[in-house]
Image (cartoon, rainbow, N blue to C red; front, side, top):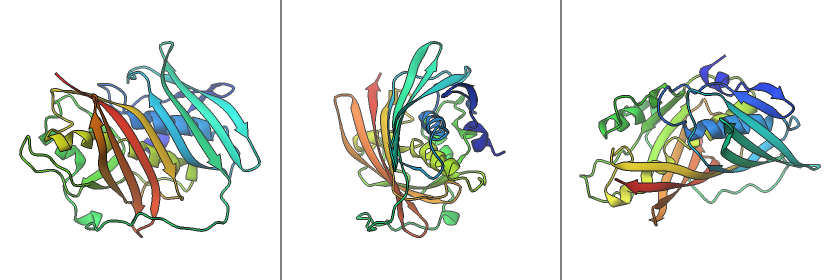
Length: 278
């Protein structure tokens, strides 16, 4: 079993309650994408086969401890003829850390349109700079072990402006789960959710000439919303096109779109994060 598949291989504790495997990183607060992927895996395990997730809305309520197990409790809100809804709560040490509502739908025939077009981007095989390398060069601390996450991210247009100079262009990356996954679509939906939190909120400080890795920044994800437009393999390259929508009042809002290599829009997401400078 791959590292990512193992990460979302939940153990049943009792009816609709699951315990999640430990985080791959061994320091710092838990990665938000892990909450999303494991919470989605818990919800999908309670839905009928053939119902694809089409949206999720989540709140990060407290930081997670990477050294302790997490329990995910699923509430079966509704099961209709073609839609299902689930609420997932994640708890640790008796406190709720994360809450998500997800909706599932039996795919139907319908008109197909996507207003967003895939931007020009070099092939992923030609992009050498990894996001981990970029993060290290911009002040990520020596004990940061986010590199242990099972994902491969290549930075197409990393910001090279001098400190204090605003960066306003969309940030684009090729990314994928770094190991081959089986053909189970539940794995790929969870994988896409896992990837979606990797870089999105980082960009909210770029218009102010700063970097998310700045040691003077105390930043954290507050919430995350995602819409899945069609099935896509998370272990194949996806272009993540991201831009900052607004900042203010100690918060920043960013949006992103995933395209597969054929140019199809496969998912959209939005996130708000806290921005505090020491």
